[in-house]
Length: 378
Ligand SMILES: Nc1ncnc2c1ncn2[C@@H]1O[C@H](COP(=O)(O)OP(=O)(O)OP(=O)(O)O)[C@@H](O)[C@H]1O
Ligand SMILES: [Mg+2]
Image (cartoon, rainbow, N blue to C red; front, side, top):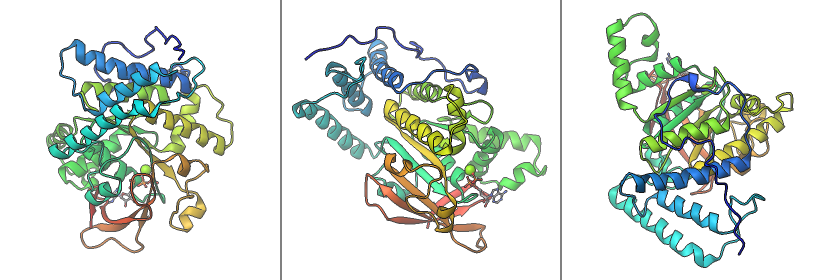
């Protein structure tokens, strides 16, 4: 079997784990080149580096952790014609070579079950997580709903309760408003009060600090101020995972449709293209991000008008026929008509239109409290 030499230059990734930058100034102002191939190289190197780092620093490396599985898969890929092959050919794999990978994966599932720690990122909504197969599998998870239905709130809640580090890429809402929403939920303070002028500076600081303390694992990338290239998202999410020595990381993209334009600009691609191509290109970048980091990406999608009229459905994401095919899951949020109940809650039906890791067509009834930016299961 021929083995092509792998790239010896250790990629654009910083070789030493650096502090995760939380400031929006970290954006590269120059458009960076992005290609699927460089993603693959970077991902493989990142995974190998995670392993080397653990060895170098004498950090016990959990043999059956998801990271070790990833590393063995990455090394396995490297030695089998390889993802690093300059022709980028898909490897052909002897099934016998998959035995140890499968056993390691099964052991990982058993260890997670015994420790009662989720095997991956969760939404924190118990019934919904069960439908997802216990956790969000790596890949694209589309969340779609009519305007103002709570897509951002749902994704922000998931990023808060994910158990593992999360990077929330916001292309629609500014960071201060997102922070207000996080404060409202974490401190159970009505959102309206946080900007009405009725709380003192000291109270505001206390509420904000409480929130920060509870959400140390969460970072926001402000893609409203500069485009967030796929490469930058990978770098930041990868560093976040390293910082927390975590096997998993969640990425949220809010929203695919708005991010797509910025991402195209960051990659120096034309943005004067039709929406269909723009969304499809963006979608393939999201697929690469998920594949390189082997992580779930919650991708918020706008609905097309027909979808809004019909209360959603599998093919109701705007601008692309590809979204539902690429996705691990498609979750539709539908608001019940009528006013909120006395507690300020409105009923939302969360329906799994597509689900690769469990039954499709199932739904969970949720209560959404807009003032507290909180979803609970009914
Ligand atoms: N101060 C508030 N008090 C009560 N409810 C609020 C308040 N601010 C926002 N909300 C609720 O939050 C909902 C918006 O949630 P969210 O922004 O997550 O929706 P979205 O689907 O992401 O919207 P968009 O399509 O604009 O992105 C509003 O429809 C409203 O019901
Ligand atoms: Mg939104």
